[in-house]
Length: 91
Image (cartoon, rainbow, N blue to C red):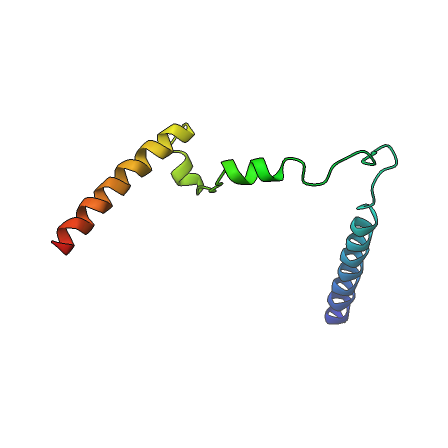
């Protein structure tokens, strides 16, 4: 008897999850107060793409660097070391 109760409970939980998913899909509709009729698609895309290269750091790595300049300085130093090592190996 307990087995059938647990099964029914799981079935009910699945129904709840399915309802919440469909509710979320319905709430994805645009609100009437948002007006993008005068918007220009891709207005800033070229400028953004040309000037940025986004890299997401792992949290433990990000804790070591307070600014983007710190990250860039460290990466430049590592790049120099890699280049020196490469030159030694080919010489």
